[in-house]
Image (cartoon, rainbow, N blue to C red; front, side, top):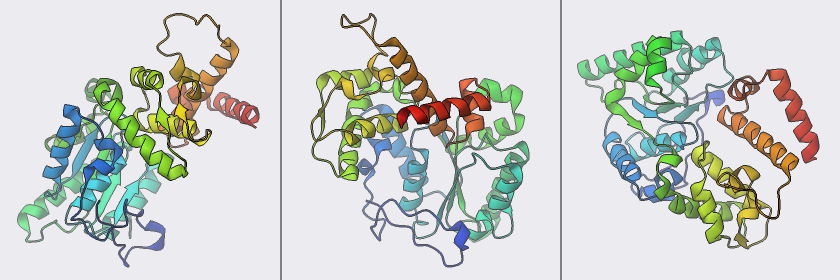
Length: 335
């Protein structure tokens, strides 16, 4: 368990930090096993724990590289609450749906997060998704904080600690986003690359059991177990949405059933038929499978973009109007 961030009275009501992960008033009882991002036995999980143990004693910025859905915000909270900043505010900035002017005002404006959160932590969910001018502003701010830390007796340089997350493609950034490329390379020494679930399948059984126990408590349900067949099916699936997609699939299966074993039939068609190499002897309902697959892809795109229909439509290769029409049709179907 880890300590709860104590809200600073100097922070404006509109910029209050999110609540801490636990209700414990001290950081001394840190247990990484309580969180989904640390469930597993792979070398990735061990390396992440080692990285966090090293970073909690450092004041500088941290960069988390990886696909969406890998619990980046949870990792940022653990770093914050395991450090000596644990009693200060923790701010999470979701860049989706905010334009450049709004983001600049929120972060660097008068009484913005950078000014208000003087010794706390600011987490940004998509560094490369920021406009180029804001990326330049962050680069200048990071350089200024480094200079202050070396030239001043103030331990933290007088500003908040930055924890930044982004999905990084080296080849694309070199050609399309030189500012973002330079910013990522500046932070490379304090970065950690998070592997997607499909590249560490040995962690999946542990992660599934961890999420199952968490969701049963959350939903106030009786004991649920995953059958061996369903466990194999879940471990074989690629999980493009990573931990968040896996948790959503398990929550849906648990929420609509009484205490029981979770078999393959309780999971979406895209998961059930992903590893099939031939049509079952009982046959399939193709129109229903296609509709389910489309709805699940749309739900996944909206989760990845935090409900931003413009960005979701771009991910799906659709016009916004087409996506909106499909959402209305799917909403009527669900009702």
